[in-house]
Length: 180
Image (cartoon, rainbow, N blue to C red; front, top):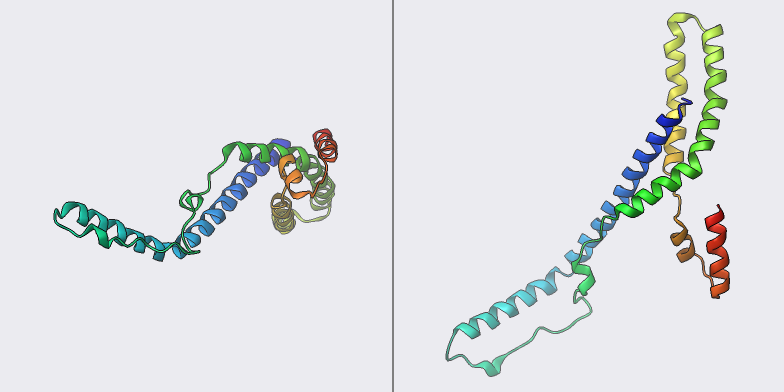
């Protein structure tokens, strides 16, 4: 309920898992683009094998070289590299998540659990108390999951998303973000 260390651990764990899921989604998209480029890669592999055979054959006709046609589906050099798993960004997001969400979550926890426990231990018969707490715990866990999956943007991401035309406005925005 109200435990600050438990809530901090929850936010840290959830942010790490959420960031890992984002990375896995990026990697899945990367693999899909690689599948689109598979036909081109097969064509290129056949071309390289043909070149290798021509080098190994001493009396081959080297005038008959056909290079694969460069098409729009030609893989770009960046598509061959999977997206990086950025631990520094993950740690920054965890710190930011704890700074922005932890206090409000602990306050909401106190607002909810203190009255519920008061009512539960004063009005509910002892044999039904665990059932009552379990009932409210389900809703509390739903709330925690919703709070945890709210995206918290790093200051750099906020600047990238903004359509700032002038450098002065960008500097002012960066200073405002640092203050927050």
